[in-house]
Length: 110
Image (cartoon, rainbow, N blue to C red; front, side):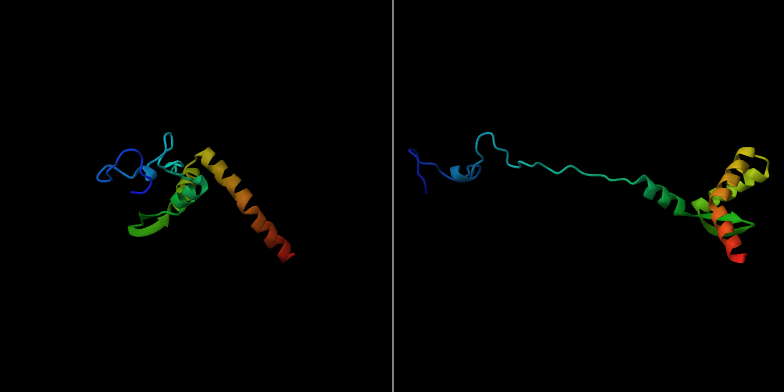
């Protein structure tokens, strides 16, 4: 045996060589197990939910529609039935999203 001390030491089961043992106060895994990093992007999650397709029965026929389209159709139906909040919401969305297209079309036609 290399590096014999004053006494004879037998290496075997559950008796590692003294040179390879951990030093006092030293951990076997100093950096430890890495923490699990869970990065959830709310925007990507919302986009995934909105783009999810669902089977819908419309006029007796089955169709696949994205969640976003179903939500807009329901909002439009509420507005037609007299829900002023839904109508105001549709109007605000139309002015925000359709106005640039209408203005661009008006300038090209002039």
